[in-house]
Length: 237
Length: 115
Length: 114
Ligand code: HEM
Ligand code: SF4
Ligand code: SF4
Ligand code: FES
Image 1 (tube, each protein chain N blue to C red):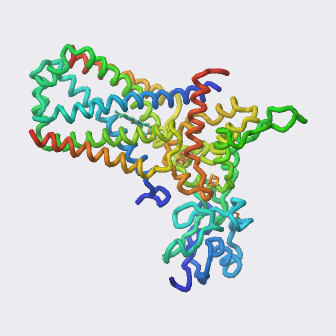
Image 2: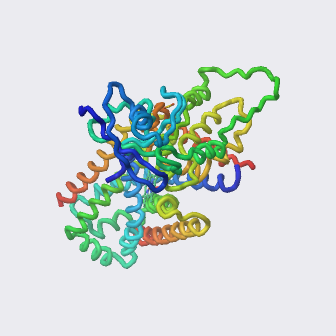
Image 3: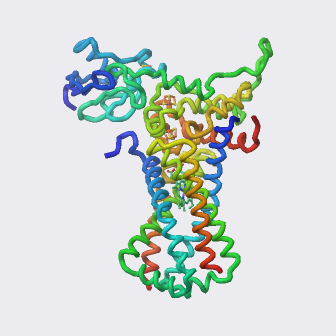
């Protein structure tokens, strides 16, 4: 391993260019450490986002050597000896340098019925959900999402159809479809069905391949496809 | 070259499935037209079949058999993902699909060659 | 469910249901091809198998219907994702392809089995 890392960093917004920095190699160094080193020691005008540094908040995702990754948990040593290329996430508007506008990503969570709709009246007793029930287990499988947009950035459908809700929003909807306390299922299935929703997904699994939390949006989306087909078959408003 | 984030078996399986589906759909009218030769009687159909005996047609036919087998196996794979409980053996499913398509192609070549 | 969501969902279901039917049809078809090409194809041989066989005519008639549902819906998806073509005109074009395939396919089946 060379003593320094040659880091190519995207500068500018939609229009811009790569700028190369030399960063000393350290032990257990993450991609976020490299970016932070540049910002602290070499060029304080570099813009990027992070918060927790331990893989919990989901704010530090960037495109690293062509793949979307959470940078705070991606070790430089594991990427090999070549130059390190860091760009903003794909499929989202670039604001400046490594920061993208996350609004379209989260707007789609709302569009996909990602909000819990309580069915019980206020003050009602706690709902009892068996931990071993099928619905609870389906919800459990998708619930650890940190909202990092890595999957969204890896998804072909998002790049082909800007309206496509994307793996994270659909995965969120699936956890709620399996929430027995929720009273908004009819509207949710309407929102997620169709050619900008779950039925557009071709199961290429780039989302599943890249999700840093090892979630499986492809499987969640398959669940939505079946649930909405059942609802469409039965008819209703 | 393809972008790095697409370089995994399930993505390549998707690409093969799409291209084979497209090719089959474009070929289908041709196939119906060829079979429709039978309307003109046995001689007309035979005339067409003699034509297909040239090596180029044989080559194209083998390609079509491989595409059909690949699309079939890949399609069953997609249906399994969508309608069956998730299987962690995704790479194996892609490999089996590819193996099935190659085997169909080889068997076709072998059977044609025996003629 | 609203109309649009329901229509798209049913279209997806029809594409998958026809795919399942095709799965069986194509397996049978592939096995037939691999068997039939041994020793070369002649019209007499093909027509000897097909002429007057109601069961085979029914099978291939169904095969044509399934592929005429499956392929246009698949092409519609490709048109949307590759060219960004959406809306009523695309749906109409897909329906036209479906009608053409049923007609052309049944015409061929008629020739072989009639
Ligand atoms: C062997 C039986 C078949 C099965 C099981 C099958 C299955 C499938 C499935 C599941 C899809 C959806 C793929 C996706 O959304 O990712 C698909 C797409 C497609 N199929 Fe088939 N299919 C079969 C036969 C055929 C035939 C005979 C044709 C053409 C004549 C055809 C043409 C297409 C086309 C054009 C697409 C669209 C490709 C895409 O969306 O990527 N298929 N098929
Ligand atoms: S499996 Fe579906 S959601 Fe995931 S990347 Fe592919 S198209 Fe997008
Ligand atoms: S599903 Fe995974 S990749 Fe997608 S936003 Fe959630 S944690 Fe990130
Ligand atoms: S900084 Fe919070 S997940 Fe990386």
